[in-house]
Length: 157
Image 1 (cartoon, rainbow, N blue to C red):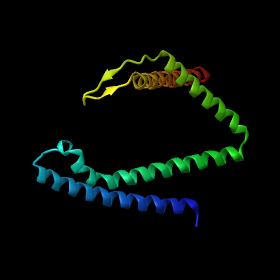
Image 2 (image 1 turned 120 degrees about the vertical axis):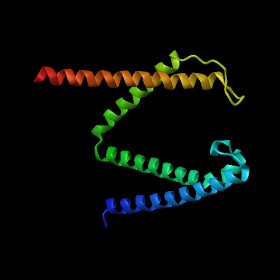
Image 3 (image 1 turned 180 degrees about the vertical axis):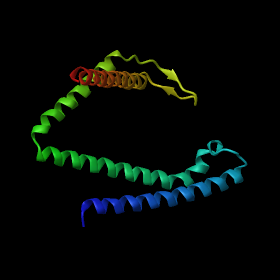
Image 4 (image 1 turned 135 degrees about the vertical axis):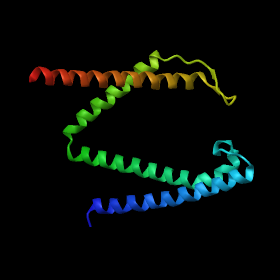
């Protein structure tokens, strides 16, 4: 049996389990809302709603871990088959780390109170800023490359 057919059946099975858990969670949350006299699920206390949602979160975590492992295996086997691609991969990783480094240098860390009464630490605030700067840099680079590509196509014709 081909691996694609096996993966199709695995995806189908995981989807079926997810749908079943979603229906169970919905019916449980509806009854919890009626029992607690609330009109929206977000008004439920966490200790009450946690038992209804935990199985779906567990499935999500399992799917996430499987996806990460499958991605790593695919990438590593592709790199093993094509060592020349290792250089391009290394260049991409180094460029990404440089962008993160530039974002970290530009970011400021300010202790920030949150809505729930907690306080975001100075270091946490700096990492949030780093992520924002990195996102902006990568977005500008992506848009710039699309514009350059479009201009090259226009000039070439």
